[in-house]
Image (cartoon, one colour):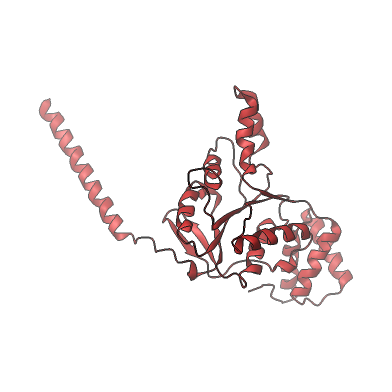
Length: 295
């Protein structure tokens, strides 16, 4: 029996050694992550798997002047970002509210509006599912002090049982080092506090100290010094959006016909928003044999 045990142990050790050799071989085959060069592009996307910031050849964005119905939000975010680009104090920003009203478009458009005057201003996108690795991103960016970085997370929210919001809180303000001076964090969300109401209410009903439990979760949004709310647009704002796009793409259609077609499109979608206006223009331009692109 002792001999059988030794044989099994020897076999297990042999298997383990083989697996280690395979892992080492695969590691040698995998190319190391390329050194991060901020001058390679004006925008980057974080790839957690490789631990790399990948340059973006072409940023998908709309000119700032074409974003209609959000004049106040444009002014505030542009001013905040310009101060940051100059090296002056600025706030993390949370753009929250109605879907399709230009939250993510505004972040990219503001960066595009400033890049010519401030070429050291870069935008780095991190996906929601990679938010746990935000400290790694900040560590990389901290070492590039000659540049200024907008770290951007689109559609940021947390579901019940998701504890990664604690990592975000620590990365934004907490920790010994805190947020790097050359980094600012912008996020968009449909939720004002980033967490679902039932998640907050559940904490209220089950915690020993309900007030403290709720404050722990709500305090995440407090890490954003700047809150910009986006609300469903009026018919007037919707038509302004459509007109601006039609003019930009030189679509040869009368104003009344354009309005009539746009309202019919919105009625079919059951909504009016910047996204719906853009989708209508894409359809209209296609039917007219025109291109609708800013690139």
